Image 1 (tube, helix red, strand yellow):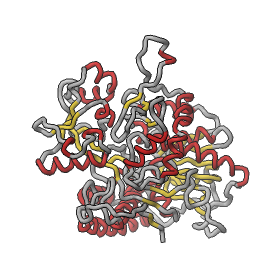
Image 2 (cartoon, rainbow, N blue to C red):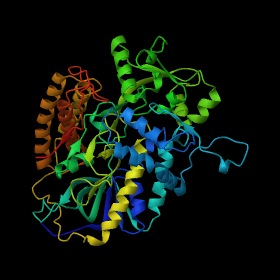
Image 3 (tube, helix red, strand yellow):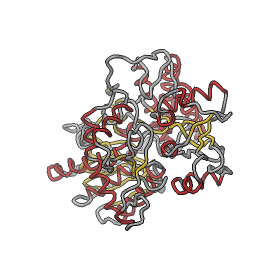
Image 4 (cartoon, one colour):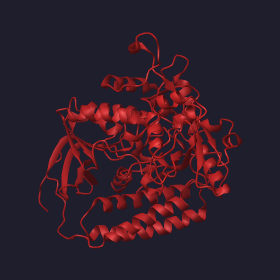
Length: 535
């Protein structure tokens, strides 16, 4: 192997959504940062987040109430210290976003609009209006504002269309200690592997909902950070808790389009094909029940009726109210021939959010020295068995801020890694069997949807694990013999996180939050997080 290093920086941030951009911008004031983006800089889950960000801004609301709502939604598995830490740091994190230029909606007043209070909406599981939003495209406002600042920052180098392959660690190189030294990355445009060394590495790669056949997430959500951290020796936790968003648009031409929680927060009803409401029969909170309850109710009704979808109806509200508050959804529906001001919207559940992930502390530090995980890739203890609506972007902001402070306190004590070997491609060749990847890709996502979806059984989980292990063997053999590609790297990571999801689900002998197993319908009296340790 040659001793070559293509890039060096103080910090390597893998992922360019809210978590990655926030961390990069905080650290760039004192450090050199490389920001790695798997696709175009904007393409990630943050861009498509519609609802908003939860934070206590109203005088009638309290941090204690936000904490309590989060704990209730988490079904007894949240870490209360983490929940309190997040809620207490929410307003300062939101103020930083506001100072960066994110324009959240304000109440309409006759006075100076600049001094008007923020318009706060309410979503499922919240006892107060506390969701700051930018119409129904909050994620887009956050993403575009932060990425523009990152692109203009002299200490941030943005590398677009780069896949992280694996973390480089001192243990893998047979050096003393157990520290991350950087990462091998695949340049998708030049189609070769490069090496990045850094004092610190942060994973901000999002979740793994692409492991399912139907998902609201963009194509990049393939669990890369979770799989890389696991291979590097980090523990993961609570991978069985996959949040299925209750309402995604059901239409052949509307892949992955989310129908925001805020629709139900502003009074939308869920209806059967005959027009009757059904949520009051399942929960006294009706459409404002937490997502796991709503998703299971929809799944039950669709299977009971043999229906392809249910319907989300806000047409009883004034048309100008709907168009003003949900312009993105209104326009997309109109393009597909659906006027949501006059008729209900066909909707189905879809895999939406990974509540588990790489285990971290309150600063985002993982089990591997120098490696941080922030946002959906991480398990902090905030979400427990079910994420409360609009706590996801909040977690990105709060923990990116905390991680930046922790990294800055150590920066001068750590030396840049030296003599890191470059990637060895001498024993691989170009693939002539891409059909293997396509076939395995489809098989994996289909059996995960059928066997490890909204409702599970022991037999389904056992079947899923057998198929998963067979696929892992095939994919590893393929990976060992052929040069890497985007599809191969994503498939390798997806089959790894699929195994972690299945093993966590098999260990939980109860139904709690997002994990529902017909064979264990009751809650255990004493329950904690499901933790997996690499061997």
